[in-house]
Length: 153
Image (tube, rainbow, N blue to C red):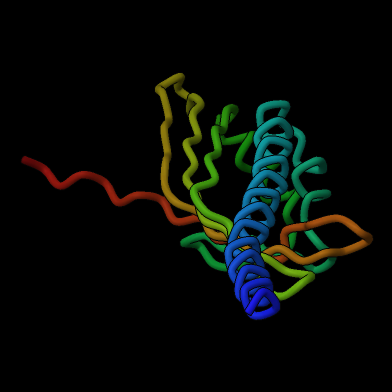
């Protein structure tokens, strides 16, 4: 009887510790994705397209309503020339995808001023696929979708 009780107790401890371990791993992943988001926003706010491109894996892709782009640094240099100069990023959720990849979703808000000095503000949601490359988590594909404009009242 004591032997059975110890097996049952061991089973319950193992069963309840696995979800806790998984929750810790998910939280760690979310923190890693948040670090990438912070580095992304920091590079954007410094108008450093090369810094943003460095966060992408080899052959990384940025997808927006205009289509997929692989020229990440050049793409952002164009955004900076258009007057965009500040970005805020949030990470809502992150999920592991095997041992060397992950998915995440969040929000973004970009502001600046156009050539005539009028304020620009764009916000939306983003999704990303991450892969481990060179021992670091890097963006393989980032998709950004702006929120549609509010309909007239």
